[in-house]
Length: 405
Image 1 (cartoon, rainbow, N blue to C red):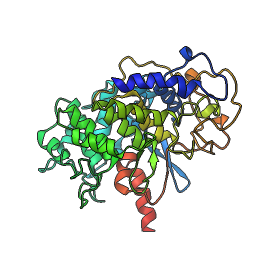
Image 2: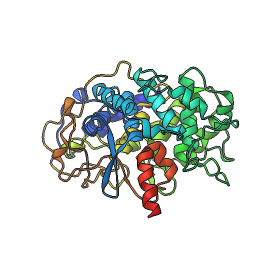
Image 3: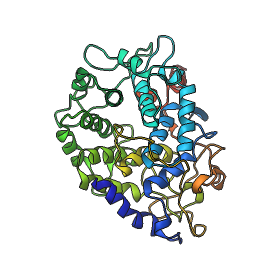
Image 4: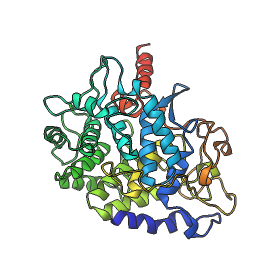
């Protein structure tokens, strides 16, 4: 499709042109491959991602799932993707909900991981994700959490559920109908019960993928997305992160690509590529995509994970490990960087796990001073509902305990 062609053409400008010499262009990976190769090296112990809250690193199941899907979309690093998938299957209890707890978004996201990886979503670590997800559907069509903490399901978890069940054989019509309830401006809200209805770029990006997958009309939502695109191709987030950023832009780029809005999708890809660290950057950052114009920092892991499907133009309805390379394939750079600040990015002290992979050019994290965190430093402004989808119940419990103290 058009965005993939645009991405391949852009690589000559985005990755080859720079202040430091690089290998011949035909030896370089594509931008999605380079980003995925960097991302594979951020897995703690080679198996999972972490998020730091109040100085403590916690396993981040949701980000780990995002990484697996991104590696599949990038078409590389399947050894890492398989290891992360196995970790998710063996450690999903708290993320999915134990006892009387059950979280819709977590079930849907792990089902998508299993499907993309060619695993059985009805027996993922001994859990039938499809049956348990289906059991969370209410009479209205909404997939809701069962939790003593309240129902934090939202527009994103609804879209993920529709996508997962579509891939499993068919999403229920009433679930699709519930998802398709757009705001008056054509976009989709994150907070389902919020009035008045306020459209959100991220929620709309996921909703479009789901609606296109099941054959529903998403033209109004695509129109709304195009109207939110900035002159540089980027897209803004919502409170508490309203600025233009790679996370929202990646999700919008995916939606625009699968919706056939190739020109807008290519423009969004250009925004992402301009924030990708090239050969003039520090070795351990090469291939990563910065969250925003502030440059490479601890937010790069989540930004890169959500940007890769947008660069590749691959929907969650179609992403697959089939045909992907086992190894990572990072940038091949002829010399050491002449500057610690590559074009379009500003180096910052960041973090990564002590154990990283070195296949295919992914450089050990020790090459960056004081590198210690992957994922996002979680603050009190982050919504508790989002943490269930992004980080899991363990992290949510920590945040709740902190709020109570």
